[in-house]
Image 1 (cartoon, rainbow, N blue to C red):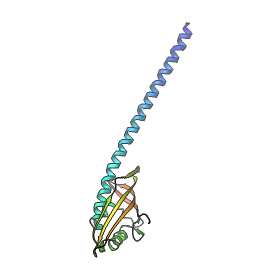
Image 2: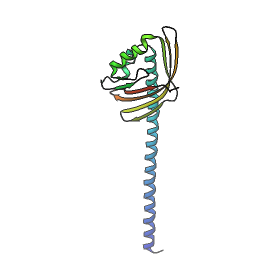
Image 3: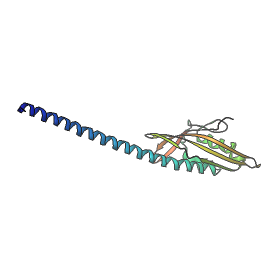
Image 4: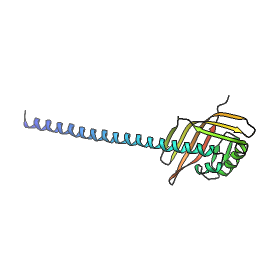
Amino acid sequence: MTPAGASYSAAKVERWRWLLYVGLALFGALLTFVGARAQQQATDTATFRKLTDDYCAAWSSGNPDKAAKFYAREQGAVFYDLAPFSYHGWKEYREGVQKEFFDNAAAASLTAGKDLKVTRHGMIAWTTVPMHLSMKTKDGKSTEADVRYTGIWEKRGPSWVLVHEHLSVPMG
C-alpha cells in the first residue's frame, strides 16, 4: 500500500470513528430524554391521582367550601356540571351545586375510577377519568350514576387549580 493510500484509509477510519461517537452521543441523549419523560409522566399521574381523589373526597363531604381550593376564582371560568348545565365562576358554581344537590342530599359519594389519563404541557394539564356518583336524598331516594369527567388544570404557584371542568352522564 502506498503512503497516500494509507493516509486515505486512516482518514476513512477516523471519519467512521467520529460518526460512531456522534451516533452514541445522540443515542445517549435520546435515552436520557425518554427516561426523563417517563419519570415526568409517572410523577404527573401520581400527582393528579392524589388531586382527583382529594377532589372527590371534598365533594363527597357535602360541603362545597371543601372543594373550593381546587377551583380558579376568575368570574369568567366556565364549569359544566351535571345540573343544571353550566356555571360561570366559582361563586355561581358553589351556590348552584349547593342548591341543586346538597340542600336535598342526606349523603353523597363521588369516587374516581382507575382509568385516569393525564396529559401535561408545561403549566397546563388535562385529566379524564370515569367517576361514580352515589346520592341519597333527604326523602330516602337513591341515585347512582356513572359520570364522565374532564378537568383542565393550571399550575399556579405550588398548586394546581381547575380552570375548566366538564362532568356528564351517558344518555340512556
